[in-house]
Length: 212
Image 1 (cartoon, rainbow, N blue to C red):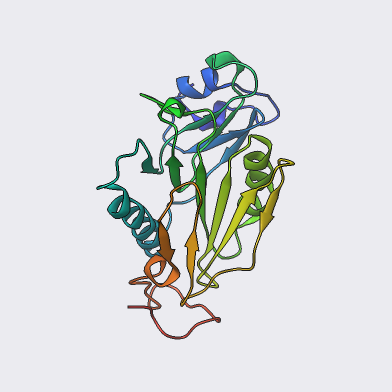
Image 2: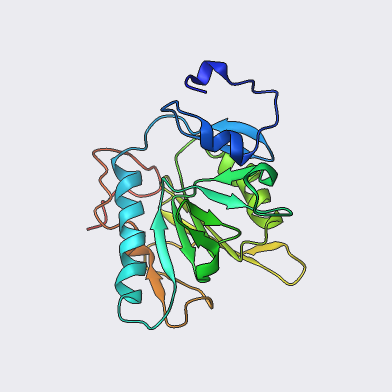
């Protein structure tokens, strides 16, 4: 399929279909349904994405661990029954992905559930991340889901409990840190998440000073 106009949005697709598409637009599959990813992210989104990935990588570079931290665009195939392309109906592209198990990676991206997924939410365009992806990440047993809000300059951490449900704390802000049991000793300062956040590119009613 070479044009997005050839897609039938009422149809259920598989990863085998998805992998054959040749059009330039980015898309995800949620239970076989196509969800387009929209316009390219802005400067602050990319700044925050880079900040988060760099903090993980700086901590991990001297650790004897197989943990990898990768960034979008990268396909993550979430598995229901088998890993056959024809059986996979959910493919997502989180902003930052943490793989603590090397067996959840192959040459095409993620296969199975990563350990942590991080989404950076754009103001007013959050339904997919707050509702649809939240439910998918919970369903597929992803141990932690972090939501970063640009408008609030905050991070909310959701941790999967023993019943397979996410439990989230309050949003963390500038002078706080987020920790995870999945990477012992790692701490991410919220001030580092929003380092070089430029208000000339985006105005937040919650904070009037750029974090430097």
